[in-house]
Length: 401
Image (cartoon, rainbow, N blue to C red; front, side, top):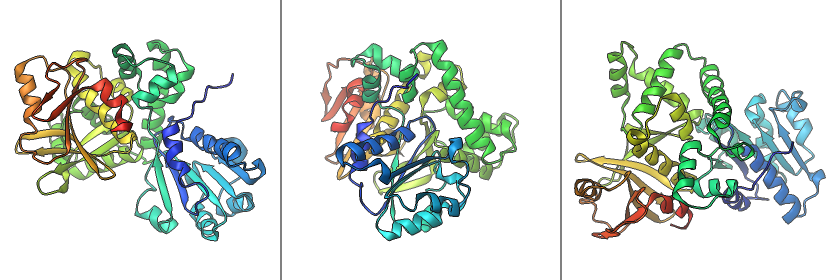
């Protein structure tokens, strides 16, 4: 049976700007977000819009057995040297791959696209590999607008709750959106990411601690953490773990791309502090599968996670702000624009309204400030220049902000 494929146009639009440029295009993110299909969509774009012949294009997916004979850079060079358009998925499985890619990129003739499922190569090491001649595209699970498009749904509160429950892995378009069906598939995704991409890849010895750490972050998704605070909590649970190990295991989780580290931003001094950070899950279902969650208790923090992923997947740079005992959930930048976003479940009392709007008291710049909730209508549509929006409208319209 053929799988349904729908273009993820917002990514194609960004990548299209670099087609036929002598700079390596890197496509990456968490497993099962269809980065491989995005590469195939680029190929389709080349064939249809640019009239490129199939004979000029090669696509290698190292997860497929047919390419198992490509072991190192020498094998790779022989296979791809005569193609102008080169697409290689899971390239990290080829030993010394960078020697070939750097050489072909320097020739100026090849148009190269490479992908893998974790970000540990996107470091200073990768920069030295490719001499800074690359541009990267992070591929995320479906944002809310894509989710509606993929599943042919209308924008309303019921369908937002479907998004809340099942989140945004694109393959779900091929399954019935029912708990029993979806959970089987998603548990396999979780096992692949946690067991293969973290525990096996980094040869973790203390598996029990790693699972405890991730569950702790799942329960406290709303908190700003430090390595010491996590270590102290685990000591209270009779697990004596050093701060350095906590930092290492958090780093492995972010490199596997199922956890996102968000730095604290000091709005007054314009500095990024790495001492205390928040951690959001790339796919909220992973978080919900790790612990038994209660909608009424957890929904505010889950909404915050959803807003974060929708922001970053629409090219917003995001930080959190905590100063003078106040916290603004997100300080967001995109191009030359900045917005502030405060996320709440519902504003059902005067005290709640005061608390959510109060965080902006010391922010006196001209940039837009939002309070967003699940309330569908707001009789206090604006207060002191602060905009109120339904979270459903906010995440749906993010591309236009």
